[in-house]
Image 1 (spheres, rainbow over the protein chains, first blue to last red):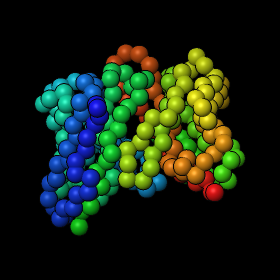
Image 2: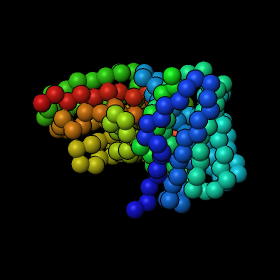
Image 3: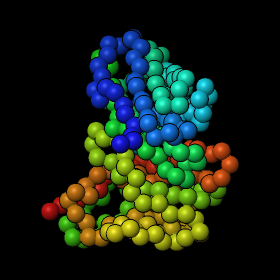
Length: 113
Length: 114
């Protein structure tokens, strides 16, 4: 079955450490996205990529970095520069235009202590 | 500036009754709208969508209504069931070109009481 996989589901890190969240899809989707969800804030776009080796900043990109070396993979690194990294992170993908909607992964809960 | 607004953070209804979730948008370029449902600690799942050329789209218990002049859409769930308890996100997009982005509202937590 095709889908989008995020790992791990729960992640704990010490303050000041960088951490990378994995996102893999086998849907042959062109576009991939990273969102962050905080209570009362809804879904906020961090980064998105429309094609391999290209990506754009979303609304809250500061303190994050991404890469898109393969169509299937779009890892997100939460750096020590991110002031409030504890959150629920969601990865999504879409065929081409967003009118087809997104397929979301099941999310990664990152807790920084 | 929030382009998609869900002004009710939460809604509580009795099982069997109608649930009405509302969404307003400010960008007149939006021409495609989607609703997503999200359970805690899971990713959102697609529920129903509507194009701006329509004013209503129905799928089983779920109906979405679009009022373009008011820049308002609503999701009706009839009858509501306890399993419908979740956060519902409204999302909007501009069709055409190379636009890949969906703009989401902040979500409404629906609680259906048995």
